[in-house]
Amino acid sequence: MTGRPTLNQRRRESTRLEIARAAAALFAARGAEATTAEEIAQASGISLRTFYRYFSEKEDAVAPLLAAGGERWVRLFAEGSAGLPVREALERSAAESLTPPDDDAVEAMQWTRDLLRDPRLASVWQRVHADSEQRLHLAIAARCPQGTDVLEIRLAAAAATTAIRVALEQWAVSGAAATGPGSPRELGARCMHELTAGLGLWARVS
Amino acid sequence: MTGRPTLNQRRRESTRLEIARAAAALFAARGAEATTAEEIAQASGISLRTFYRYFSEKEDAVAPLLAAGGERWVRLFAEGSAGLPVREALERSAAESLTPPDDDAVEAMQWTRDLLRDPRLASVWQRVHADSEQRLHLAIAARCPQGTDVLEIRLAAAAATTAIRVALEQWAVSGAAATGPGSPRELGARCMHELTAGLGLWARVS
DNA sequence: GCCCATGTGGCACGTCGTGCCAAAAAGGCG
DNA sequence: CGCCTTTTTGGCACGACGTGCCACATGGGC
Image (cartoon, each protein chain N blue to C red):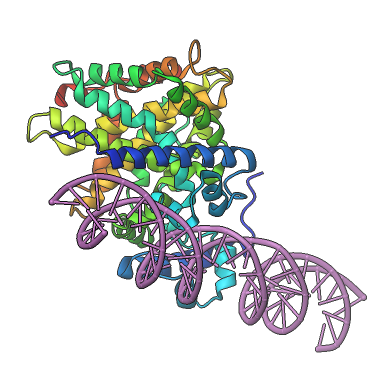
């Protein structure tokens, strides 16, 4: 069912990441506005036409970096922590996904901080979280008995996603490091708790 | 301090709305992708160059319609309901802002439903709510004693904005009318309650 | 060797959004 | 009213964006 990715698919994913890194460096240095798609392509060693086969618009080029954490979050929630109440499962997987497992994850977090300063990239940031909310919605629905109110599930997914988003935005404007006090993990745990603890929602989204 | 808008400013606002209506009609009919900025300008009786003086990108043309409710919400919250606890004040102003006061407001709601179907306009919808969250953040901060934790205020604004957004999105996909059962007002009240009632947050954001 | 499938580059094209300048309104003032 | 200043509008040109199309390369199976 969950087939491992083809060699070619992994190649493609790797290229995507390479482009994303090049784009992030350029965006952070000159700003997204002043960077042309041609420059990103050149810095990635591909043609302009190929760039647009990997990303539909130039701002999207940094999406893999911004979305990595959220994707890991949903994966952790969906795969692990079965049997736990939804709220606890969400809190745990969020905390784990906000704990950078390797250097790449730390790097992605650092880029996030820089990229969030660019107003031109705000739309990407928001799209990434909209996607995350949608995926989380599906993952939660898969755990709930059929017939659970869709609105409740939407609210649960939205509350959790919002908590993580606010945590990351707060971390970005603060000077804190990616680990330790003031880290995304710490802020994320706090935001998740403050936005979810006490809601009657979780009794109905089981 | 709060100067009434100049005659010219009101003229400009009126033109913005006229363009927004024309754009909404075209977007709803053919989709945003298949509609050129030139067509919107032509339908509004202005030149292409002037269109771009009112809106920075063609998708933005419908923002006035999508943002009207949120702006009214923050205005109601900031002006009225002083003395109430923040959560109650938010709930009341939200309910009132979701109750269309005139035909224009009903019209804006109807457009919202149509426009939300267009994936190309998702970014506008999200930007509108990001702005709303920011304005709400400022309005809440103005009511809190200085030194209140910024993160708490951000979370409060985010939770409330998210509740309203989910309510409207749910209303849009449902077939319900703008008033009566299943209306934005009803869904909004429910979402606000489910996402805010029980949070310890409100004890600290006073 | 061959073939087929998939990924890549080059080119042309329509649209987007902006800088620039000239024409046209709109608002005081004698 | 005429005159002048300020603001708004339109036309034009231009670079950048994103896509359809086709020709070329790579790479794996027979």
